[in-house]
Length: 168
Image 1 (cartoon, rainbow, N blue to C red):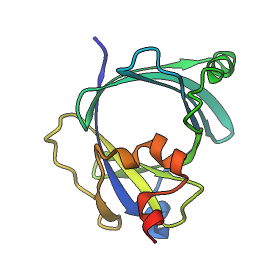
Image 2 (cartoon, rainbow, N blue to C red):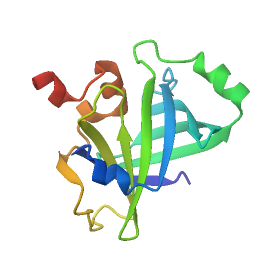
Image 3 (cartoon, one colour):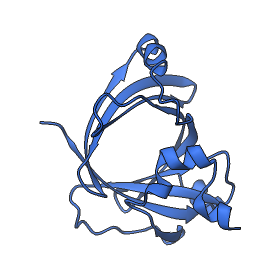
């Protein structure tokens, strides 16, 4: 059985207080691959933390706005380089920094992007869709964007901006 990922996503403002509370930071390069099955999203990632890089291959099948089947495995650098050659030509690589914030026994993942000093996205994996979320009081949450394709990593990378930046 493929594991399920239940996740909600929020648009937030970047603040020094918020990043000051984060416990770790990882630099990520994410590349979407050509789809072999139209229902399955494929990607590779390099994740660098404290100078140590690991590589991952992931397949996702979207079930609903917040639920996906996710199959992920660590791969070698050689496999990563080989799979990169299967990059979807219409999608640009995603460069982001992931900050981890632990608050009230919850693990928030905050992704900042080089194209914005003002906005970031914050995600939280849940055990079930109806799970209550306790937000840190110092997080400046603008709105929930779960299921809004304009805030998908691929759309943000393609546009090199958050939708709000286009409206300014």
